[in-house]
Amino acid sequence: MRRFLPPALPTARPRARRRPRALARPLARRAARAGTDWITSAPGTYLWLAALFVTTVALHRMSPELEEDVLRQSSTNIHELSTDPVRVLIVSAFWIGGGAWAPYAVLYTAFHAPAEHWLGTTRWLAVVALAHIGATLISEGVLGWAIRHGHAPQSALNTLDVGVSYALAGVIAVLTYRVPKPWHLPYLGAVLIYFGTPLIAARGFTDLGHFAAVLIGLACYPLTLDRHTDSGVRTPS
Image (tube, rainbow, N blue to C red):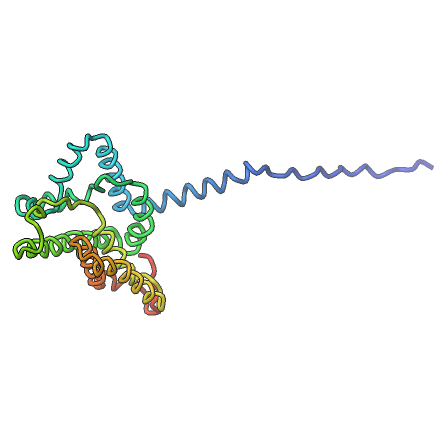
């Protein structure tokens, strides 16, 4: 009797392990896409940061004499404010003042970008402008009073005062309304201590400007009214 044997079953091939490099590619693509989405959804923040990069590189290539001249002409000091206030209030926000650009890239990503995501570009820009302009006028106004009454030298009329820190302080303050309850109170306390301590210790006009910018940022609460839920947890727009 002829015996029939069943056909041999195909042997299973061992599953090939995915190489670490192959696994890393999708993760890198997702990270790149997330980074691109983060930047493009905060256009004001990163266009401003790009402009600061250009001006910072330009400053580092100037001679010390030319650098000081450029910064002085862009400064929101009393002399320039009394001569061409609109120009210097705008131009002064595009210079770091000879410092490093990288720390500002971190600060803008940590504070400006979340604020712009949350408030939208128009409202975020309103907070930036109010803090920058308001704090400048308050601090320089107090400095002018000090000069008139002999509490500051006449040379302070031409002091260098450029930078983006007043706007940054205002945005840091308005983010208090973005922090979920009850953590908004410790956050607010840390902001007031950070900006209030130098004002008490040194009492410089820039310290006054920073604290004024914080108060202006807190006063921007009406701009945040439709940007949070009834539960107190803020949600992006």
